[in-house]
Length: 257
Image (tube, rainbow, N blue to C red; front, top):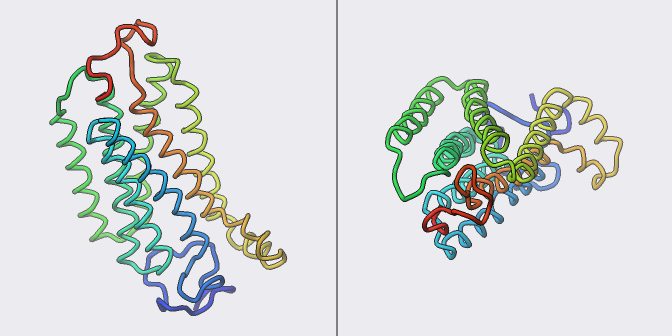
């Protein structure tokens, strides 16, 4: 039985293992969770711009790939929230793992002085991605995916904190901003999950356009999308050599770092 407030729609009953707090098919007959769907534009449009600009600036392919992975997550999430079908859920959740692995690679390779490939790290992250995919396809537990994703995010956070505290403190503003925005989105994601019934009750008593503000999963998309975009910028800001002020002793072929 569908939760109170949900309606029947174009894609039929949900088959996904998750159905978020937004009421289904309330705004559109063709989109199950309207606001959770359209909020994914923050994952799609800015990263496409970033990928195009990175290509024009001659940056390395790993940065272009990072932007495109964020776009892929946005497209998958769009399809998932639009249909609430299990296949579309996988199209959302598995790219989250893959994109985070690419983020980890970029962040651990941001200090190199020339174009090289870190094969051990690449193999480790590839094995992690494949392993998580195999387990999750056979053990359909969302908590498993959330823990595996959270592990990668934790690695990114710890590496970023190390960089801004002990290596390049001049990046603190950008690093802390991206982290704060992301954590704010994570907070709202938890509020949406824990207090769903109360949020639905509040929305019923508010005008529709005002009630949109309480769609905290959509806000999670907006803040994490913006945080991810800023974090990619954080990874390819030109790094000077340790112990040298910015503008001196910069890396060879700075444009490609």
